[in-house]
Image: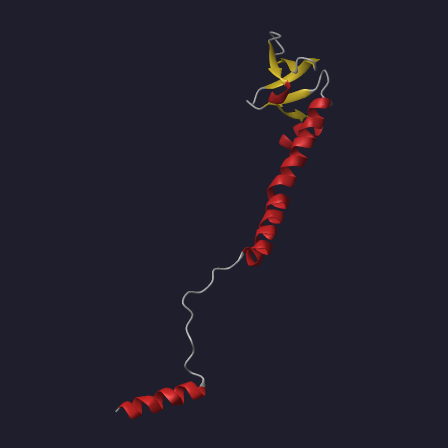
Length: 124
């Protein structure tokens, strides 16, 4: 019987079916994960960071070009007409009611958008 087991073992070894087993496989190194991480960072930049920077730049331009008699909407949804812009104090005075002349002072960062005639006709 021992002779029979020895013959089977030698046949398997000769045919290449018996392999030496490693004690533990090595984990993947940093070099193999680096291209994936770089791809994720590039994807994150173009999907999230770049559009956000463009949006901030457009908002900064909108606030810097703000002038009297512009129709604006605040981030709270208040519609008004700019009556005074104080850039040093970063405040804008808005007339919110035509009949009573009610005015509000808001910060420049509270302006969400400037309403133009084109926007008004599209909304109607």
